[in-house]
Every structure is written in C-alpha cells, then in structure tokens.
Image (cartoon, rainbow, N blue to C red; front, side):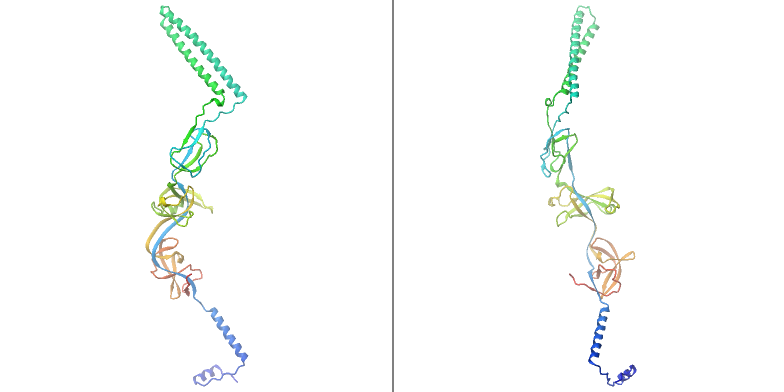
Length: 403
C-alpha cells in the first residue's frame, strides 16, 4: 500500500478522512519503538537542568572585623638572680615551679680557693717573706737608733746644750722610724698571706636572697661551680602577672586601639580566653617571613580579662591572638563566601525564581564570615554561596538540600 504524501496527509486531515497507515511487521515496530526511546533518552540527557547550589538568606546580625596572629605568653616582671660576688657556688636545691618568698635564701657562695702555686711562684713567695722580714729588722734597728738619738738630744736640751731645732729634728726622726716599722710589719703580713696555704684563709659564705615573691621559672646554673660576679643563676617571676605579646603587621596594628576586645586561642583548651589590648608599642621591627618577604612587625601587649579564673598559662607559651578591630551589632550582612568580584566592586548571585541573577552590591568592613551591606540587597533575599566560575547570570539553579 502506498504511503500518502505530506500534502495528501494534510488534505485528508482537513477532510477528516480516516488515515490508513500501512501495516508493518512486528520487528519493524520494535525498531521504531527502540529508536523513539533512544531519542527520548538523548533529549533527556541534553535537556538543561537546574544547578544545585548552597544558598543563604540575607539577615541582620553582628558584623565583626578581626585579625589573628601568633603570640607568646610572658610574665611581666621577670627577675634574673645573679651572683653578687665571685666564688664557689653551692648546688641549688630549687627546681622550676617552686615557690619562693621575698628575702628567701636561694643560693650560697663560698670564697673561692686561690690558684695552686707551682715551685717557681712558691719560691718567689717565700723570698718575699724573707725580704719583708729583713726590711722589718732594718726598720726596727733604725727605730732603736732614732729612739736613742732622741733621748740624748732631749737630755742635752734640758741642760741648754742643745737647741730646740735639734730636739724637733730628733722627735721627727723617731716618729718616721716608728712609722717605717709599722709599714714593714704590714709588708711582712702581706707576704706571709701570699705564701700561706688555702686552709689559712677565712671561709665566710655570702647568701643570695630573692628580691621578690613568686615561682622559679628557670634554673640557669644548678650544679656546684666557681661563679664569677654577675653570673645569672636563676629566673623568678609571678605567674599571676601573665601577659601576651603578639607581633602583628604594622598595617593591622594601626587599626587597633588600647582596650579593644581580644581572644586567646589554641592555648591547649577548647574555649578561647577573653583578653584586652593593653598597649601597642610604637616601634616596628623588620622580620623575614617564611616565604622570605620582609615584614614590619609591631608588638601588641594583651592582658587577660579575668586572670583569676584563667587557665594556668606559663612563661613563653605559644598561643594565637584574635583582636577585634571593629564590630556592628545589628547590621544588614551578607556571607563573605557569597561575594564575587564585579570589576572593581563586589556582586552576589541572588536566587530569583529558579534563576541566578548577578546583583552588584556595596559592602563595608567585615570579617571572615560576614560583610556589612550598604546597598544592593534586602533582608530575606537568598544568595548563592561558593559560586563557581561555571555559574553565569541567568543560569537555572535550585537550592541544595541541607546536610
């Protein structure tokens, strides 16, 4: 049977004439059905679908600008106890963490033994003793002679056979001889001391006392040794006077103010420790970062907000410091993860009846989580989070199910 042409088919339809299709074999109908199913499958595969995206609603809330950097804990007043005199330092019994009171004896220094004398030095010392003895004997002989001359002149002066000038000269010679004897005796004592044995000296110990109450932070010299005057022995400080020093970039430090809220994180516990900025040092130092970049770093000193209930932090612990630069309590905010660059400004993809609409907005300061919206969005609108490069304006989207 001949198939009707397209024109004949249209004429038959308009005349409502029953269309007689040719009879086909069962195999032909199977192939036609398979082709139709394949065509529908291909059409379903290439049909555009809505992209599943994460969305968030624009709301009012706290917008906070923060900066985080690494810091170290330290005790405000650290006393380095040094040896006041040189000598034999006795072994220190204190250990790091021990409590000490003001004025407590923390170390003892004995006089050091003199250096050992060799044969030549010992001979010189003995010769010095002999010379001092001879000089003393000569001085005593001169003294005896001066004493006899003074007695003779005094006797003659009483009988008017000697003048007053002769008597004054004899008296002066006697006094000079007596002084010479005293000097020679002192020289003899010095020579004997230089040649004496170590056991002949007096051993008077010098106690070293703590200048303040606190705890021992470090023992710098524990074993018994000969310490020179000024040698550091140990460090003492009060853990209740703990503070945190963090090195921030200079461009971040200029935005801080004394009294700003802060938090101490990664100190070893789960909850952050509240703190406040106490002082921002005016002097910046040049530091080399891990990438080899020169940075200007400024010391920012923080005090704990409640030191009585703070965990027991020690001296030199590593922590992370989070300082609040600014905060707005009830601001229209947009998630930072929804922002995309739009030229020199910012934009977001707004969910509008199943379509992604690129909407330019103006934002103010904010933190890692939220930015304050100045213009372009209203409360309740939903924006796309983490928009990829494949998302374009007008694309079909649908909110992904919440996990």
